[in-house]
Amino acid sequence: MLANFGERNMTARMITLIVGGGMSAIALLAGLLVAVNNVAQYAVGAVRPEQFRTNELLGIPLTIAGALGLLYLWPPVQRAVARAIPLRPGSPVIYLTVVLGLLLVAQQVGAQVQPGPPLTIGDLLAQDIPLLILCFVGVGVFVRRSPRRAFERLGLLAPRQRRWWLVAVLGIGVFIAVAFAIEAVANVVSPSQQKQVTDVTTVLFSHFNNPAAIIFLGVLAAVVEETLFRGALLPRFGIVISSVLFAALHTQYALSFATLEVFVLGLGLGWLRVRAGSIVPGMVTHAGYDIAVGFLSLIAK
Image 1 (cartoon, rainbow, N blue to C red):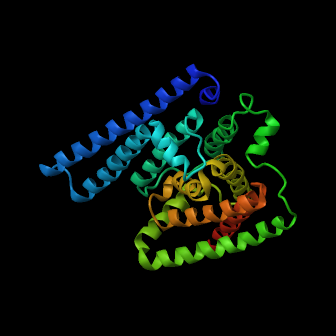
Image 2 (tube, helix red, strand yellow):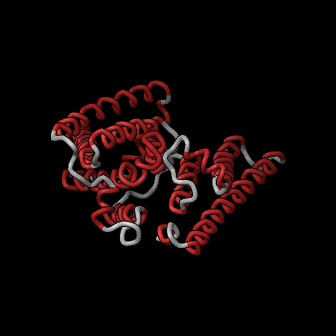
Image 3 (cartoon, rainbow, N blue to C red):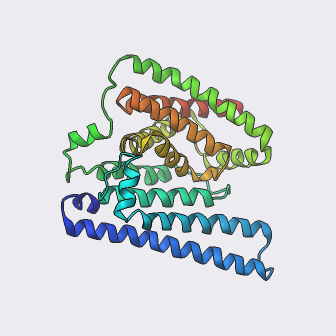
C-alpha cells in the first residue's frame, strides 16, 4: 500500500525504495555469511559434502537475489529491463515486486523436499486469504484504482468469447495428460526423488481425503493463485516470469520434476489468460485439474 502511495508521493516512494533496498541488502549479507561460513567449515572438515551442498544452495541464491535487488535500484538497469519486460522504470510498486520475486525464487532454489505437518483448512485460509488481499492491494485498490478498475486490472472479467469456456474445460484433460507425461519421465530419470515428492505431498494433504475437502482445496487454490499470478503479475512480467514465480511458490517440491510440472502448467494457464482476456477460464482449468488429480489420488487409495 505504501508503494502504491509512492506512485504519486515522493516521501512514500523513497521509503518504499529504502525498504526494498534494505531487504535486498539483508539478503545479500545473509547469503554471503552462509556461503562463506559454509566454505570455512567444510575446509576444516566440520561439514559433510552433502550438507555443504545444501548450505551452498541456500547461501548462493540468496546472495544473487540480494545483489540483483540492489542492482535493480539503478535507473539505467530498470530502463534496460523495461525494453524486454513491460515494467515501468522508477515505479516503487514494480521495484518492491521485483525484490520479493527474487527472494521467492531464491527460497525455492534453496528448498529441500522435506516432510512437514499435514495442512488443515485453517492453514490454507491463513496462507491464501492474505495473498488474495495482496493482489488487490498490489494493484492499488482505493489508492490508484477504484474497486471496479482493480477487478478489471486483475482480469476478473467475462472472457472475450464464449468458446473460451470450452477451451477451459478441454484444458483440464490436456493438463492431466501433460502432468502424467512429466511424472512418467520423472519415475524413469529420478525415481527416488519422485517418490520423495509423492510421499511429502501425500502427508501434506492427508487431511483432504474426501470429495468436499478436495473440491474446496481445488477451488481455493485456483481463485487465489490465478488472481495473483495470472491476474496481478502476468500483465507486467509476462507469461514466462509469472510461471517461474508460480512454480517458486510451491516450495514443498523444492527443485524437482514436480516444479517443472507446475511451471509448464503455469505457461498453459498464462496462455489461456492472454488469449481469453480474463483469468476466469484459467480458474476453471486450474480448479478442474486440481480436483481431478485429487479424485484420482482418492480412487488410487
